[in-house]
Amino acid sequence: MSDVLYIDNSTLSALSCSTEALMRYVHHRTSTEERAYLKAGTSGHAAVAAWFRGYGKADALDVFANGTWCQCAGDPAADRDAQPDCPKCAGTGRLNDGYQAWADENEPPGTRLTYLNTSRILDYWFDTHPVSALPVTIDPALVEIGFAFPLNDDGSIVFCGRIDALCRHKQTGDYYVWENKFTGEVSPRWARQFKLGSQLSGYQWAAQQHVDVPVMGSFVNALEFSKLPGSTRKCTTHAVEYIECGHLHARYELLGPIDRTPDALVEWKKSALNLAKRFIELKQRFPRL
Image (cartoon, rainbow, N blue to C red; front, side, top):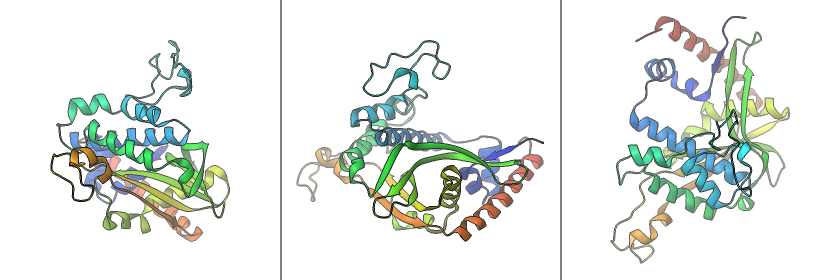
């Protein structure tokens, strides 16, 4: 077989603009601002995944700050002495770097993506969203599911990615995709993108391949990484200074369930194949800048 193309949702979405797809996914060019957004989101995903796996708040926030613990270092109840010869973490006990050190070095003080601001938002989300209160049940074994499934018969184009969680609706027992989103603004306009957007269709299709049973749709858990108020002015809502109640102004929203029909998933697969072929053409036409 010729070279296999592995393509994910982000690449498929970027192909609506050939220049963006070429710069970001062929030549891997991003700005510092984009890296901050991506790093904060990646660490946020890891922290929520830890929460879904049963970590306490302090441990989940530690994952956000310092990175995901390697299995060789044990679970949250263990002493976490990493194995020095572990091939996954090279003896550090961490699979990645987390967000705090990078943000402290690269994010200007007082901006929305500082570690202090983002960690306060996550901290309050954990306080207000115990797993037991969610409208779904989450199996820790179905959290952060990596996947790679072929889109065509010869396996030369493979759709890959990571599903944040597969959950079951408490009322119906049906399977749904759970997708965490970290954004600068949770608004009706932002939320509308998921009604017909391709990302949830792709994850729903992949989830069905993983569990081999129908998956009915998706939930989108939106956390707004906006700048929390922190002045000494008095808040008219909470009657204290903003520096005391800033975390209470964090915005979260759970969207869904957002359903996709079987026919819609068939159409998504056709579209994904066409976009993947377009990506191959871009790589061949512009091998270098």
